[in-house]
Length: 106
Image (cartoon, rainbow, N blue to C red):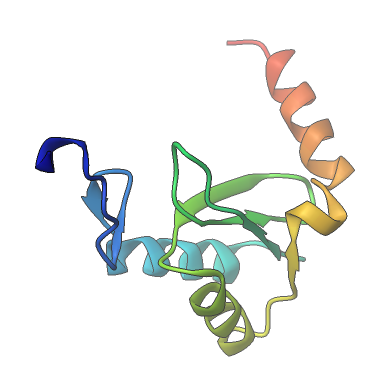
């Protein structure tokens, strides 16, 4: 029954290819913010591995990546500290930023 096979194709994430533009977007985030740290978020049944970037003020963004190893190489290439979110959790400044955004006037 070929329909039920859900083999993963390299370089694909949640039904679409991982785009080099994603890594370029993340690099731009690093260049335009202070104190950025990277966090590897593990693959789930819904999403592939992602890289979460959190700036000094808690502003954050995330994009897909092919693997944790590629994320680590990318971060080391930009001299960005990188952590495993399963080991450290999400930084408090990110949660604080999200809370501030909820109460921000439109």
